[in-house]
Image (cartoon, rainbow over all chains, first blue to last red; front, side, top):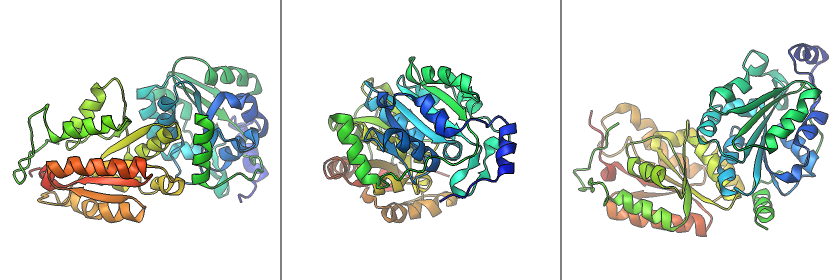
Length: 206
Length: 183
């Protein structure tokens, strides 16, 4: 279990624009989660999604194989063109396979949206700063990778625009949601990747 | 990289009737609809066929591990995929194969070998020689194919083992089959 970030580093992050609280901002951005098939990254985002959906069968969340979330979305989207696929992942997970954005930008699936919950830190390992606290802008990387519909959210007022972007339009959407480096929801989800696979496939195909 | 027809096996090189075309047709008959690849001479024909086929999704990867995750996503959505890579790319996949093994995902990869029979580039040997042990350590069953006839039969076997029995399977197209690049 991760340690709490210290007050000074939270204050420093807030000075850089990481001010929203993920406990409110993630549910506000995703809204009606049943509208999506959801793939979640490791650590914080898996708990954001589990708390929001009650560890729903329409979610597949990781707890290892770091760097795979966006590409799972890229494989799932064309397999289920009738549904909107939403990847919710963190800055650290995305940074580990940042080339995924290039692979996705080239394909540009019509029904894929990516939300990167960017707290600028590796929360699970003790809140060490990630590259996004040190000048790397993942929305610019997404946009530079050819993902045409992208947005950065830093204030409450910007959330509604992001909520529209991830559920509308014909083409992949990327939303960078900047949040302060504070704890994700405390939620115990099913960590077994095999039972979660069967659960997802059963829900997805019924 | 240039494709070198093998002098050892007389592997067919004329386009349109090659063993690679037969492998592609076999994948198609087994409803494989997602192709993930890193450009490679050994898989040139399969990649070309997949890109020209409106019925499949063919995705260029920046690194092979992306393809491992992509195929897991395809399975979650009820689709079948194949990862086309060179043996050096196998090394890039190791941790991502945790997803396949832990999740019990069916998984099919076709691997064009370097660093084995007749290889002249010393840089290719460390990963080429480690390819099968590394895959097996991560729970992937390895089947080797040395001739065009073996290639077709082995891909057929692998399709059954992966998508009927739910295993992770790699078919290794050896340099006896593909020929060694000249240096």
